[in-house]
Length: 102
Image (cartoon, rainbow, N blue to C red; front, side, top):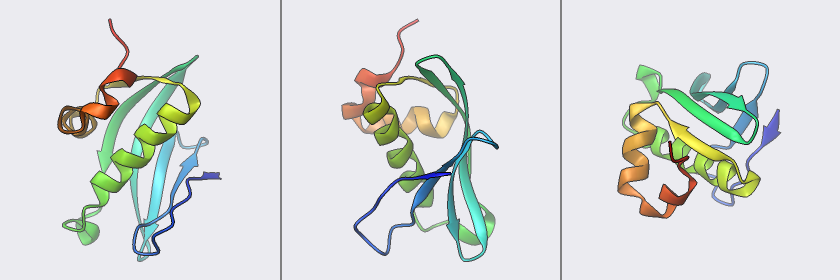
């Protein structure tokens, strides 16, 4: 697993788990994640899930930010099939340039 770094100890570290095709944040014994599929230089985000025990902490936003920053760093084109990631991109226009035009 490769790690995404964070300077804030309050923000969980998001790691890429390529064996499971998901980016994960491990918090209090639970795993929140964004599932993906990779095809060449395109990453398709398919699902975001935050366990009930972790909801209300902004963890889905942390995940979305981390995966989109990773996509930017790797120069991946993004397809947001996950409704949450799609809405996050709408609310954060700095990520719109990453979206693959069809």
